[in-house]
Image (tube, rainbow, N blue to C red; front, top):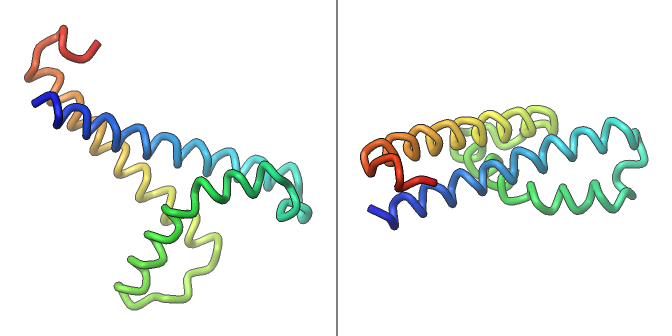
Length: 105
């Protein structure tokens, strides 16, 4: 049971980090404008969110839509990460309620 809780917490953490990196990348892009590609923070956040973008592109190719634009890709990444985070949070709450109040401190 503890391994399941650890796994769910890890998935939730990865989703949170990717969501925050995506939000940070959006904000840096907004502030930097057209020079965002040369911004080191933009490149770092792009590196952090690259696995999520690659997963969305694979899913899009499997669904028969290989040519997603960058804005559509970012929306799908955000939606899938939010769904993953929501499901992991619901699973963690459910498991914590089953284990008792002292298990998830």
